[in-house]
Image (cartoon, rainbow, N blue to C red; front, side, top):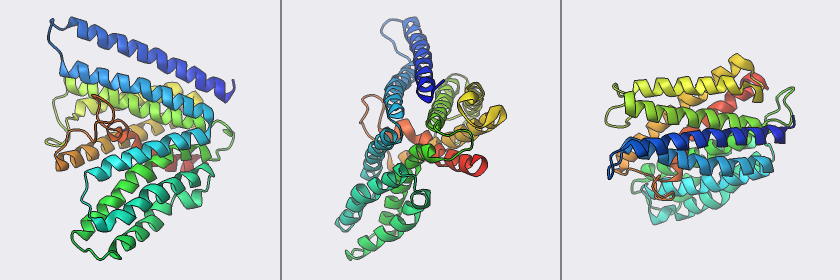
Length: 312
């Protein structure tokens, strides 16, 4: 079967799963007494609805190849960077640095990824951008909360640009015997991470008792273990679209899901620190883009570098 055929098959399978999940959510709503709602059920349904949008957009981008995926995640990175920096400390002295971050650093990072220049895109943000932008801000002559302003800008670039760029970067890997199918790694990563998150959410809310980070995140030990088990099981089922083999796919799914859940906790801590519930209101009823991609943001570079180190 061709790579395009495999992508279409995966998309149809994802649609089938989403239809089942939507029916389950609607059935849970119908069981509620008239006039009452369940926070758990409504949260579950909003996640499922966001999955529909993500599956459709990602499927279209994957079918377009590296250019389509790079463009999709560049736009997502721009929106995520805007969400993050809106909640940070800034002054007029940072305007030039921010403009360079949005309109020079971000597009260059994804251009380097699109051309497969691994030697550049792996160091461009954490070395060159991190050294240049503080200089731009310092030259404006305002030292008030300078370290805080610089660190927050750098962290925003790290998560919204550098980490997200590792999703399309998976298509640039040169794995023996897997040429032309690298796009399937993106599907594998997104499916196992998001599925693990959804199961974690449901089991954590329904059966969770022991919170992992009380006061920061509602995640529970029970929910995380259930989410990890689901990610591993799905990784095993989908091993045929990867070059990893059965046990390699299980290990990669576990690594991606674990790092994604860790990222979810980190972002929850940042939101608590800033006193907000959601990163933005970009997606009605579901928060911002970072709320939907927080796990993928943390999982993508781990997944990329493990794939590069072990299988290329």
